Image 1: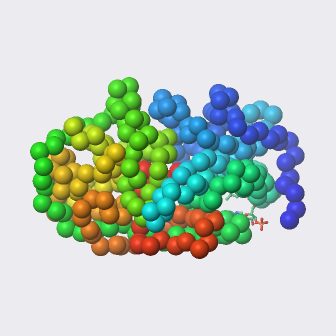
Image 2 (image 1 turned 120 degrees about the vertical axis):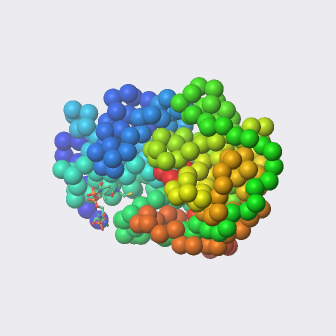
Image 3 (image 1 turned 180 degrees about the vertical axis):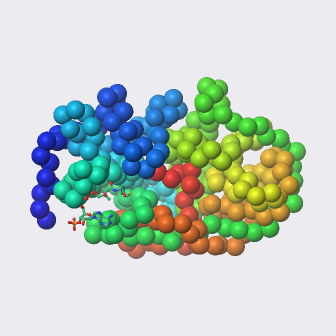
Length: 297
Ligand SMILES: CC(C)(COP(=O)(O)OP(=O)(O)OC[C@H]1O[C@@H](n2cnc3c(N)ncnc32)[C@H](O)[C@@H]1OP(=O)(O)O)[C@@H](O)C(=O)NCCC(=O)NCCS
């Protein structure tokens, strides 16, 4: 494999605390994917375990980047000491010079030095990662009739941009029970928090007294989509619907609902995005499942 052509560029890693370099990453991701991660600064900052690898120009433009971070998750009831890759992008003028291969190699070496059992990532280009031993996991949501609401808990909207609400949410994220035993993140607060800002349709509700935050959408009257539940003890779907105060006829959960006291039918998630896993070759999902989109990175 030939070495990358890094003419006119210099390499930096672990640069998130340098404001100009952070701004260069925000710009790269905005230009490449149309997403703005800058609000993370007001939401507790990027994941503290993040290790970005980037090639910069002398003018401070970030030409190529890939970030790794620790992302422990539960798979088939077992806590996996995993890392994740995110923010992989190369600006068009610098593509085809081996820069992405270079940062991928550096990120893999960082993970190997830290003895992570596995690495996961989301991509719409699986061919980019297959040569490194990543394989795609099939993703399934669960769909079915809504249960009868039950319980007297009420809820209120939660605003992560409000300091008190942010502190409440961060506390729950730190001590959450994984939303599913089959496949779920163990913590990864930063990903949840930035995802509340990236999709304007996501609603957050705090169940009063129930110590739970529900991330949900209502894309059509009577149809509720549950994206995630952040709680020390996951409430039942019947209690959640009652607290949200909505009349639902059908429900979709974007995770396996094994802790919700409800079972829908597993349905392929669709969409062009793949969740890929490297390592744990002997393991596959015991049940159809997907990672909550609130963990998307
Ligand atoms: C995909 C992308 C990161 C590639 O960057 P690059 O610097 O041009 O890639 P490199 O020159 O390092 O090529 C690395 C390898 O990937 C392959 N590759 C490049 N683009 C590819 C693509 N779109 N699909 C599959 N493989 C690709 C190259 O052929 C090369 O293979 P080799 O190692 O066998 O020679 C860049 O085109 C980009 O930023 N695209 C938009 C954002 C994106 O898709 N990010 C990654 C998705 S998570």
